[in-house]
Image 1 (cartoon, rainbow, N blue to C red):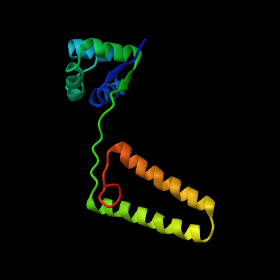
Image 2 (tube, rainbow, N blue to C red; image 1 turned 30 degrees about the vertical axis):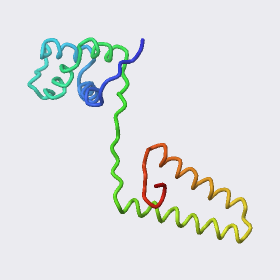
Image 3 (cartoon, rainbow, N blue to C red; image 1 turned 120 degrees about the horizontal axis):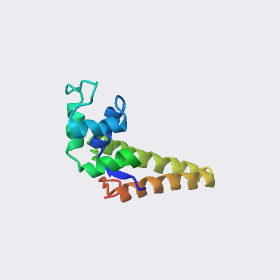
Length: 135
């Protein structure tokens, strides 16, 4: 069976409930709101509310077959200080490469070139433009 993809918040709610309750009891809580012989006094109200916001079939499948967490976007802020560090990195690598060329260290020159290429490539792939580096 295929695993269900769940938002991180839902997966975390299942994990928190799973620390105290079996999968069967989690379903009973969702259906009845409580368990026989166990006082469900709202200690897990937030988690239950999160699970109830989902389609019941998805929760049932997740408990039966497992689940994966849906990929989430990541927001990155590149501060002016970070931009300066990147500029200094490329400037340092340029100087380092020139020194290696003077000393005839062709392997080092190739390694530095590969490092610089990799760093520029990552910036390009991520769509990051830094003035003075790749803009």
